[in-house]
Length: 348
Image (cartoon, rainbow, N blue to C red; front, side, top):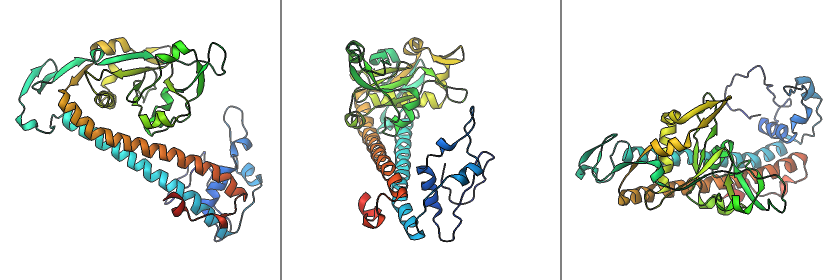
């Protein structure tokens, strides 16, 4: 369900709804439909379906147009700020990615004019730089865990589990729908995520989405969670050896080879599921290793951008939680909108 501004074409499996009475708020009606949880009115076994007849029969209490607009104004203030923060996150990620490519793909890093180029097994690189097998740059890696749903004497440690499907949310500073499960102490100890760790997907994918998505977790996300975090059994924890390479470079290397589809050479198909040859990946994937001072300068530029993006993502999570709390209470009239402050004052 979505509130649409401007001109759009509706597909065959959608219903276009708008207020009947003049002066009604279309945006209020969009929020009202969200609050009504129409899934419970859906028919059909294989594919749930809400028909126009069903929709017309659902009872609803509608306030006067002034109250409608006030409610829509309060809720849309949250949505507008979430949208703005999401755009800022995308810009920060793109800026950091472009700086990475400028420095480590095109070799136009600060001071590059005075550095000679030297031959390597993968072509010309700045003198003092090297291509190093990934396995030599990783200090710790291990497959994830799944644990079980309920606590027992053996499975006693609670921890959220990041799955491949949660990676897009984690990139936006949220654990998303990562489930809280219980794990044995021995399995948990070696899998607990630390700031700078990378969750790497090794199974799943689809025709249009290769396996091998990765996300670096930050301190802000981990410290906000009310329990520790690990990655799921279809992912791997990858921890950079800080004496060899900083985690930001490893993270952007993974992003680069995923975007270019170079990562597909390590995929294998088995019984309809795409798996990842991680051992081969560690042995064969060559990662550009710049000198420590260049790494440190890049980290000094990229890390604040990534931290701000993570902070904005966490802020979005808080905004969504607050909006979802207010939505049913405002729509039902449980909260008196006349007693609430202006949204701009609340969210400032």
